[in-house]
Length: 375
Image 1: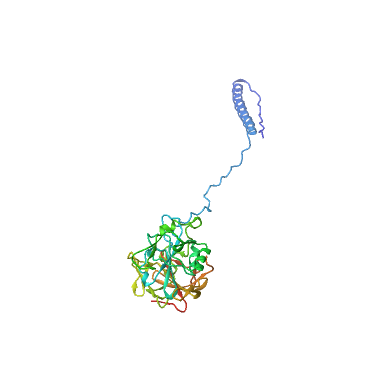
Image 2: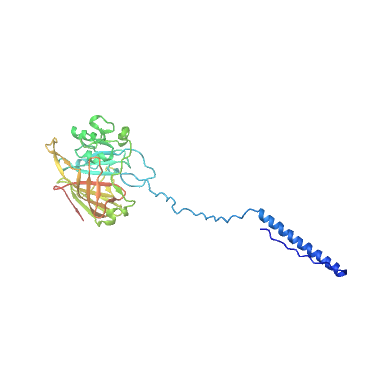
């Protein structure tokens, strides 16, 4: 709004006083006029200016508290051992039947296996299903025939199964389980006889030749069969188990393997009866994990040339067992839902049993005719 300016005029006087008054009045009038003009101009300017907007408050920018967490550092490991590797080689597992009578020892290449399953066959002799993946030896043997429980052992691996022959129903069962069969009897490449032993204990094989025969549906690496801890110290038996020094096992009246813990080797060392179990290359057979599974063994209708029924280990179902890792043992229960399902392990208060990274031997100890002790 424009301010109202009132100017009061005075009457003129005579003489010098009048002149002084006149001059003073002029000066006052001029000053008042200037003030009035300035006031009018200021009022006019203020009317023409836009109204001032209220200040805008800009909130400071902070980093979101819901940032994406970094990805966990999960190392690359071999599926059958849990051992860290700089590079995982994509190739199938080789499940190879290797014999274990006195005449077949020492075996060739057995020390390189990631997993070894020991099963009872005719006459109480034991045979191995040795699984190779992370390390491929130059030679393996002696190779022998397939047995009725082998499909349930090997089907979860989706692998190549190598053997020298066997009853037609057993061979067909391996194929029906989705596995690729490489057999000497059918002319597969890679089998040869050595001159160090008499037949049938002298049939060896070349793993690289077996791998080269993998068909299109059997070239992938196997899925894990057990769950491994990040380190041996974090394995379930190492954390919750009872200290142990030795495992004495009776597989049959013929077979009495044992295992002794070696802290220096960070491994369980195998013996056959009282003799150290060695490979043909002079390496002691050893494992980071020894799993004992109590299993039922039944006779099949098939009879071997000696007139003995061929036994079959019952793999589908559940049972009791013992896991030895890191100089300790823990009781476990095992279960297997189907031929192509891996063995699951549980322990008291633990839903998932963790093994130590490294090699695993599985002892399929018959209920009734087999036993084991821990000391």
